[in-house]
Image 1: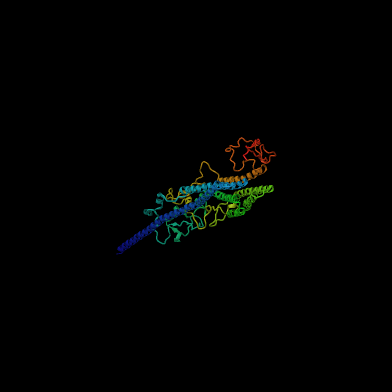
Image 2: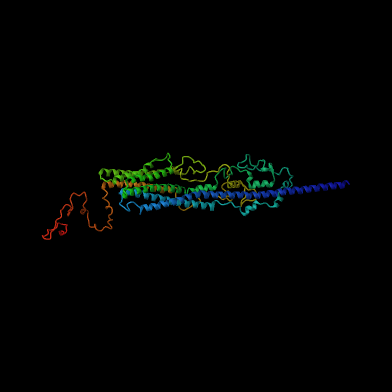
Length: 583
């Protein structure tokens, strides 16, 4: 009886042990399958978040480049309209076309202003076209080559999944672990959310939501292989905290290709509009005094256009301490009124040599005001380095302090660049993937299930990262590289051309004052010599001028005509007279 009881007890113990072992095997296998599914789900979710974040990055590129494209397209329409009206004012609608022509000095003021407007608006149109096209090319290049969605490959999906048979290769302590007992492996140190844990890599601490200091071997493998142990070495880190994403760096580098085109298209358009308002003012004044003889209308009309000109200038420019000609534009706004005063004396009923001298003095003052205005335009457009870093505030423009922009337009360029760093609470998943790869973690096409040696910074590629930071603009590798400040040099040449125009008019007007207005050209209304055949045989000695002392031969203004009678013999007619008419 005792032997049977012992055998029964042994069988019962063996059965209980076997049943317990089967239960422990099934329990731990179910945990392994659950953790494996969670691991694959985490991989897919992280890639889904990374794809969503890169999609946001692509929207960043489209938004920042689209801002320039939209502005430039609007300015192309505006400048085209001003060019069309300028062409009409300079051709069929010019003053003197339908009536008597104004004085030559007044035609110079009108024509100089309208063609300055055509020049500046034409430069603005071309610069805006370049800026828009360069921004579109940059966006297309970045979106099609650099900033791509991190879609996992088939090999990466295979590495992320775990077969059920992998449970058989786990340690026996994990396969038959009793619940609530310690696991076989110490918990790897996991990084806290939004910060890095203190302590050295490998120290045991509570892990995740389980509040346990030990984990199964498969959890240890996941953390070590997929997450680089949960802790990143400072020396092996590729991207520090709050570093700007790579697409922001590439986009800021690419913006240098069209930055000055955007800035100086805006400035050139302003100068074109200012010159256009000058031209319209001179057109209205000329029409009022030359054709209508509207004296008081001539004095009142400039106030409307010059007020608009001054308000536009006040709206767009900012007075800073580094300008060489502060407030010089005030005298520039007064140029048409000096011309109006000169017209008042030019068209006065009574003639006086003194008023002619005063008229020329007012003309020179008007020319000088335009010259000073052109120099003020150059002063405002001169690029200067930023004194301090602009604050990054919502709704306001921002660019790095290293960029040189015209200080007078710093508040109204409406140019924005990507941020230089991430804000608190923002994370870049691509940088986290790069940091894990730099420490030997992560799932990539070249990785395997064995722990690999940490890669160096120079050898770490961008396999999983959709952004390839090559350090240069994506479309800068051209055979001929133009300087980025080319727009500034073009606008500077245009402004200096306008200034030289007014200086030239001051010089030649002085020559005209000395030599007289009739020394160079034929009187108004006479055809040019190439079409005038009736006076080709004339020489200077045959032309009598008002300054000649003697009267020309055959001059008979003071010779009395003689009557001829039919009944008597008619006396010989004086030279140049025909036969006397019958009485």
